[in-house]
Length: 335
Image (cartoon, rainbow, N blue to C red):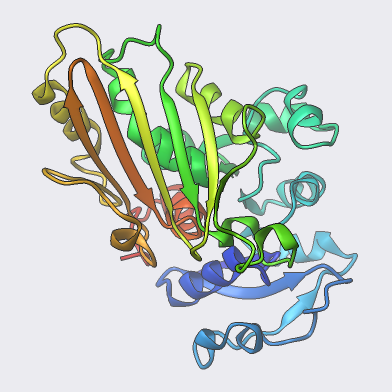
């Protein structure tokens, strides 16, 4: 059994990680940690998330100063923390042979200049940016299997890239016209900390981060092409629905598109490509799947992708990456 800990365990993603790891046949959940200043310190995680009662009743331990010993006592760590926190903690764990699966944005883009602009901090570890492997599990499995630092892909970038990459890789899109991604997320994507902007009664349906959301450059960097990305906040708890419009190259048929998806995802158990119809959030919430459907007309394609933002967009994909790193079936413990 590989000993795993979660740092930042009190948030929504941390709770999902705790549930998955507790039930995983090859990972032993060895501790849940929060910041020393957290109001949740010393509480049982099941006191915060009653659905975990008699499933995971471990306490949320305040993170102490002796991180070296903590790293040496464990095999892998999941960071469900703020970007700056992951940035500061990752080197300590890596230096002590503890593999890092980071769910923040601290290592997703190998460009130090990216971080002051989009994340508000100076990146002090360019050597780790080069070492980090981007955790889009279906596309980077070979590299994930060899690294000790996985930067798990973001929620919007996961569904957006899984929807577009097969068509881009097979040169089926006319990229002179940029793909347009309109994606709607539930309020859990904003995290557990209370604020007026994500208070359930205040949210209707609104766009935000127009032309400046940090996930746009993440998507564009790893797709290898620019996109227009507009996120929206919806008045539901969890899930993302992305509606993507793109221009096809002349002569591209629906059969070619279907074959491209089959080529890349036929043996990928956590991506479900629809033969007919389009996905909905209802189809994927509380599951580790990304569902993809599409329609073609007059030289354009509309792709609809759906995922649970807390699972395929976060916790489930992180464990999927850990499965790959340790040579397990990538869906082990997830389905």
